[in-house]
Length: 406
Image (cartoon, rainbow, N blue to C red):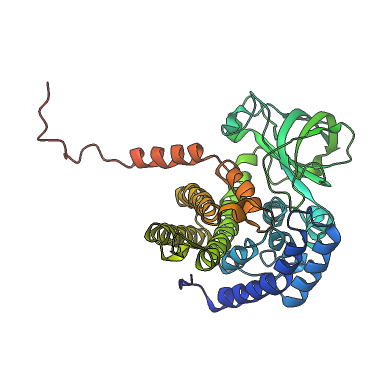
């Protein structure tokens, strides 16, 4: 279903190129491996070469680092097209967690760090992980519970701690590690991000974390221990003790790009469902003619439109230099739930075909559930929204004046 948005000509052109790329290049490869994944890395490299020729490779990163150099607001529709296939995100180099890590290095990295790490990341020569979440009772939904520390010893940082759910940690060449660098300060004021090469002595993958998820693309989350890990002081990313401020700069845009990728997934899922419903007959008529099914599709189309509008509104604020913290929280919470409901509906509408591996819906279904947890669980975002709502309430407005009281 096509709904027009106030996207720029540049954004529209990028979206159209990305749409054609996904339809003509990515989905044919996807269909070869449905039910028989993961897709070999060589296939992704071939797709990346085509994306580069097409001018849609890593569009969100500046040209001097190997990206397309487009504005954040202009690349969002492309992210949505990329999300229509689990392969599309990697092919266009807009896949998490590298996308967010590249953005962080672009914003806060030194020239030396950008030369050593950002350019190879953009080129797809290396991979990265954001190592923040910790096992119970460490940092998670409440990042103030951070237990990992980094202490200065001469011209080195010495890191000790235990992390969990470091996405892509099994294969990463570089880890962005959040650690307490001033244990006397509040964690928000005493935490830093330090760049740690994966082959540094003392870094150990305890185990790859078994998890719910799709099987078409390689997808890992690692439990990692840091034991007296030493890295040079110049591996500090951004200002010392400003790790939380930096992470917020990273997470705001990353949450919105996640929303667009999953919105694209939901849109494709609905398209599959509608095609199936028009071909499948039961009890004397096509499924697409049954009112309950038609109304269910209408509801999800409407909610997806609302989600896309919310994301664009938040992105506009970020593009104008605002943090848009609450707008991002609303977008992330709302979109995650809408997308999950949409893909669930699509799978249900397709019946047995939906849960087979002949269609991508089963992979979509297993992939989308994590979205309500990653980049902040629903409850964390609702907590932020509620806190803001009550802080803005003016208790002197007098709306309750006429109520009887004891």
